[in-house]
Length: 233
Ligand SMILES: N[C@@H](CCC(=O)N[C@@H](CS)C(=O)NCC(=O)O)C(=O)O
Image (tube, rainbow, N blue to C red; front, side, top):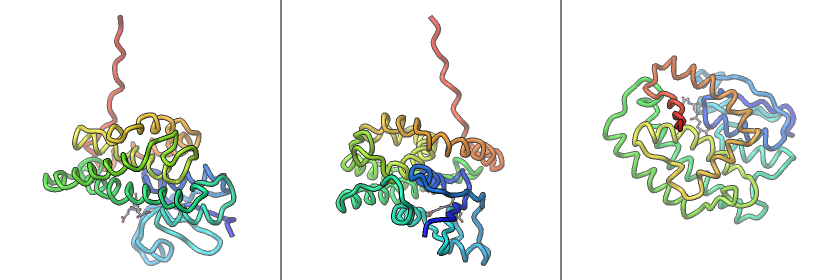
């Protein structure tokens, strides 16, 4: 059963955006239900950790983005978003895991001082960096965009990584004056190609205004960089 899919969440979330992009790329019939994370019992019945996104299906709700992506892949007909062979699928999941655990989660621990009007402790800043560097080294071993992370076909790994890197690059530049994207050979062109997809345009059209409002509400230290001045002869 894959009819009546409703993705709950809100578009500041890189996790929500990855799931949203996957539904679009899959060609799924779905609706988006704007939903903020909560901890009340009614919410926990839908998303047990009280997080967004979650996907309402005819059979019940699924939370945790990787599980949502797996469900979309297994239950929704459409273009394949994992490689056809078992080894290729495992490699794609390996990349997603590395991006989630060793890029997204550590950078998320810096969100308070970057996006949320708080302060990051020097110990946190110092502890996160080696985890990121190790993850980027791992990704350099695992991916050679050609043009997609896992080869010729777009996969969930591309979508998950793109929305992580899009937000993560802001955190990395703000905190370390360094780049995630430059940290893995081939990712600059890959990122530009991903940014040009129509699913990305649709997802980011929701993200940009929601993110600007979020930053304002939180009194975030992070600011959108000024567009570079073009040199005049
Ligand atoms: N592991 C979760 C993470 C999702 C997540 O962290 N969502 C954030 C928004 S980006 C959230 O709901 N935060 C509220 C909270 O942690 O209480 C997933 O894969 O979906």
